[in-house]
Amino acid sequence: QKHIISIPDLSRQELELIVDTAQSIKQQPRPELLKNKVVASCFFEASTRTRLSFETAVQRLGGSVIGFADGGNTSLGKKGETLVDSVKVISSYSDAFFMRHPQEGAARLASEFSSVPVVNGGDGSNQHPTQTLLDLFTIYETQGSLEGLKVAFVGDLKYGRTVHSLTQALSLFGCEFYFIAPKALAMPDYIIEELNEREITYSLHDSIEEVVNELDILYMTRVQKERFDETEYQHMKSSFILRANMLEQVKDNLKILHPLPRVDEITTDVDITPYAYYFEQAENGVYARQALLALIMTNEFGAQ
Ligand code: CP
Image (cartoon, rainbow, N blue to C red):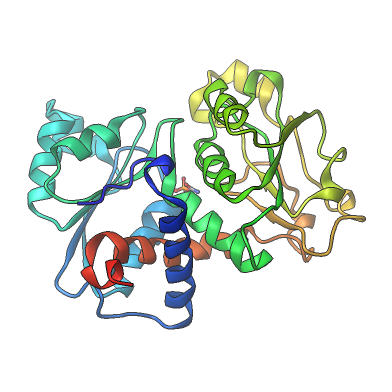
């Protein structure tokens, strides 16, 4: 069975298949695909988009959802049950298991004990592979290709798990990267080492203005408040803010993405520019997660 834990577990062909399927499901809904299937949705860390788009995805494919939004209020959170025991039990009730957990590696551990496919909805500051699937779909939808794009990542590149997963995925498609972050929140060494090993072009910058006019995709992120103490957070937040007046000479095809939630890193005057695409991106979470469920839960998809 296929677990979705980390982007490097997926091939370029599988990523392309998910993007194509997301596009097809967006155009032509499949309300019967998961009929009689039960999917567990277990969140041990806060979420709005990931949980609700995932649960919408299941329901619009005709399946049903069990689970919880607040792992603190479970036998694990209140009575000392281990994650492993919880996973053994919940997977026996369901046909797939979707989880978010604050600890890095929690989803990988769960996959070793689950009797059904496990999907990682975010593990600490490590990986967020399903966000990457919806990001890839959104980039394809707006650019018509994933190949050879100029992509900037801005903000908290250290703790922002979405940028780790997306950099790994886009590096399979010959994209060029621009990293813009405070020094203390730079991209982790292991990602930089992977790019060096594969001779992928990237550069480091101190401001958005330095590069914005060259870009196809500008991917903004928030400073991850939940990974800092309050003093450190106050020092780091608002490091890079995108305003509409910085977009006067950008390329026509530029799209601004953000995994959301935003705090103050994109001012609301950007929302009404033709470049803002973050709310459409969030909607695409439903289609990308439907495509993923189709891949891991139906034979039909594997035969395509
Ligand atoms: N993009 C994202 O993961 O949002 P949530 O934390 O609201 O799920």
